[in-house]
Length: 95
Image (cartoon, rainbow, N blue to C red):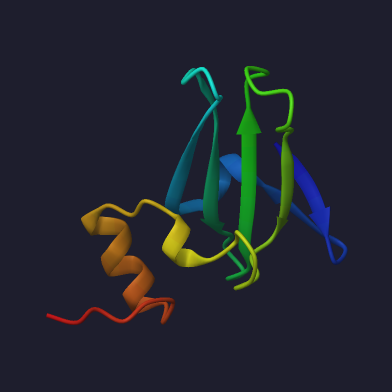
């Protein structure tokens, strides 16, 4: 999906994925995924891609803000993404 944010054009297919949130309807059907993305200019973007299984969800793209549901703690992050998030200063890894 493409969008324009602050007069800059972004393509979600060309962004780096830093985390995901899978969504399920009340009947436990998969209804979409929200992605935490990083564009080549460093902007963090939240992209929600839905499949229509949940009437209360819709597709959207917005900038990442550490508030409400756009908290990095909400996203599932694999080990590679964890390292990258630490490199970017989004999280701190404590051993």
